[in-house]
Structures are given as structure tokens and as C-alpha cells.
Length: 254
Ligand SMILES: Nc1ncnc2c1ncn2[C@@H]1O[C@H](COP(=O)(O)OP(=O)(O)OP(=O)(O)O)[C@@H](O)[C@H]1O
Ligand SMILES: [Mg+2]
Image 1 (tube, rainbow, N blue to C red):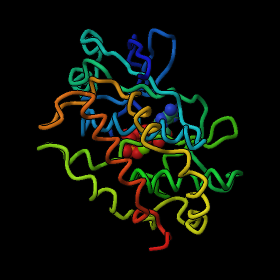
Image 2 (tube, protein in one colour):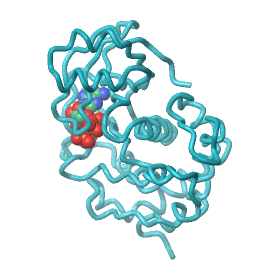
Image 3 (tube, rainbow, N blue to C red):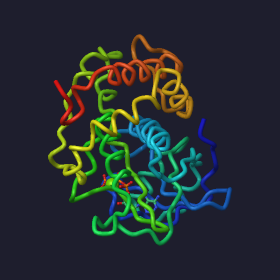
């Protein structure tokens, strides 16, 4: 499981983010971008962040270190901004911390030096059905001369359909993914070669290990999957099923 730290201070909101992420300090003296459990779509988004970040690392894509951030109720009391106070109140408990990359820049295509990393990011987004890496909002940072991938909460959206119980993985397995808006859409021709290199890195055992990183607390039970272990197994089934097809891979032979 990802390590857990306690929030010691809410520093400032990150005005850019749609989900009102904030910069916080924690008792390990770290500074984190906090993704709040009380924001928007709740803890499922945090599950997607952890799973896709781990997959990214396995593919050799840089992504900031993640921690769980325990938020106590007294922190909300010292917050003057009402909107932030509401968010903190709704987020008491375990949140996600993304290691803050100080001095990072927004991604600029002109400075991309490693073409292969772009293709691996494209593969990752197709596999996890990430819809949040467009030209307008690439969710890539440049830091210490390298490209870092962030913001993976809009992946694995199948889990938002699990309210009444875990659905059929076959549908996600076959679900197409639209490349047209992606920041690296022009690399689609390189996907088959990248696919051949990446596929051997992933299997059921590896995916089960990835899911072990997700805190129990965010694996809220749904009918038929009552325990965190049931929920982990459901995610693994969905990812294994998708790995078994190529309907989602743009440009793959039918
Ligand atoms: N770890 C980090 N280090 C430095 N800056 C970051 C980090 N994470 C996020 N940011 C900055 O904050 C912005 C918003 O973060 P992020 O994209 O994760 O939030 P979001 O609410 O999901 O955003 P949106 O839905 O608007 O894309 C990023 O575009 C980036 O500029
Ligand atoms: Mg973003």
C-alpha cells in the first residue's frame, strides 16, 4: 500500500485544477498536491490515480510519488475561505497526496526529447481509457528536464458504473478509445511496436500487485463485492480482460 502521512497545514488552493486540488504540508515535511476525497466524484477517482500511476511506472513513464494523506477535522476550522473549508470538512479521513514538483513547467511539445516516452504515454492512456490528455490540457509537466505524467483520475471510468454491482468486464475489454484529441495523436503509427514491447510487462500477477497499492479505505463495497479484496479482484478482472483484446488500441489490426 502507498505510505500514509498526516496533513499538518493546508497551504493554498491550486487554482488551475478542476477538482480544487490544494497544496498541503505533511508530517514527513513533504509538500503535496492533495486530491480531496470530498471533491467531485469521490474516492473512485483516487483509485484511478493510484492504479494508473503504478502502471505508468511499470512502463517507464515518470510520475510523482504518491502517498495517502490523513486529514483531521481540526484543519478545516482554521480555514478562512468558505469553499475550501467545505471541501476540507467533506474530506476528513484519507486523501491522496501527489508529490509536489517545485518549479515544474507546463509541457511544451517543442522540448520533448524522448519520442518513445510519448508513445508509451499514448499506450497507457488507450489501455486505461484516459480522456484527460488533450492538447488543451495535457496533464504533463516538465521537471528536471524530463516529462512527468500527472492527473489520472479520469481513467478507468468503468468503475463509476459499479453502483449497483460490478459490471461485465467484456464491455470495457472491447471498448474503443478515441485518439483524435490526444496530445500525442500523431504517434499512433508507433503504437503496434510499443504494444509488442509493453504487453510482456503486464499480466494478472503484476496487475494484482498494482492493486495492492490502493488503500482499503477507497475500495468502497458495492453489491456483490463486499470487501476491499473483492474490489481489487474486480479491477484486476477488468484490466486482464482489456489486456486480452486490442479493440481499444488505435491503429491495431482488427
Ligand atoms: N505534482 C505536481 N507538481 C507540480 N504541479 C502540479 C502537480 N500536480 C498538479 N500540478 C499543477 O496543478 C494543475 C492541476 O492539477 P491536476 O491536473 O492534477 O488537477 P485536476 O483538478 O484533476 O485538474 P483538471 O481536471 O483541471 O485537469 C496541473 O495542471 C499542474 O499545473
Ligand atoms: Mg489536470
